[in-house]
Image (tube, rainbow, N blue to C red; front, top):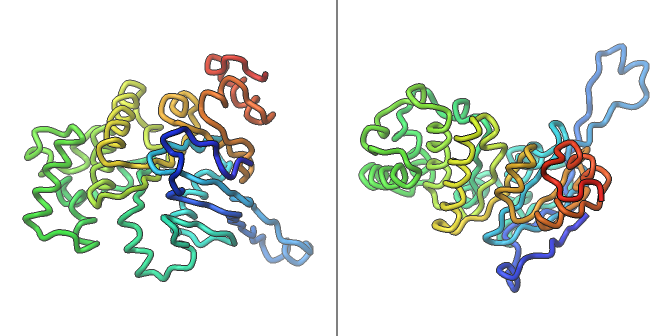
Length: 286
């Protein structure tokens, strides 16, 4: 389904920054001994089932679908946090599935991830300043003085001011929206070109969601970012994404420009999703 997305004019004549081809992530369910004894076949879970797509520089591609459809597993497989069953993930022409651990770590400077729950991914014992600076030290990109200067600049950019005050705070002192701004600052500190966002605003209040999405939109242009944006929320996808890939049972069933998808959905599953949120679709189920 839609391996090569029809890109808007700004993407023409550019190579994809990310090319995912025939990616599979299968799991075997291990039953108890008696169940295994009586069953000839182990149950296979196809979390990601032969997924292919291309993502172009500067694009915001939404990956939408219901919980359990394989969106988060796909993002972790792209990042090689889990090795794929088969298939390839090419980032800027390099096949990530063939890299050793050291090369993969170096490549991760260029690909960063923003998670759903900022509280869970920020170390409660590290100050905000330490958390944001940490990737600079991991990748040997700055000494202590340069790191602090960069962190202060990044705090300013994500709207956490006065910066000196936030620099010394701990995650527990911050609201959910402020924690997510810290997580965004930490993701951007290594100057990546691709951000994989896994439900980054789903745990925030509606008004805070909009503020964080507007921030991410402005950062995209300033830092020349490309986004793979995972969400179950069709409102958020329509607001934020240029194009959308719809995922169901481990497969991408439809992939089109955002407005096309919402006004003229082709796949029955996409039509069902839109009918569940009728205010979104101009012609749901057309």
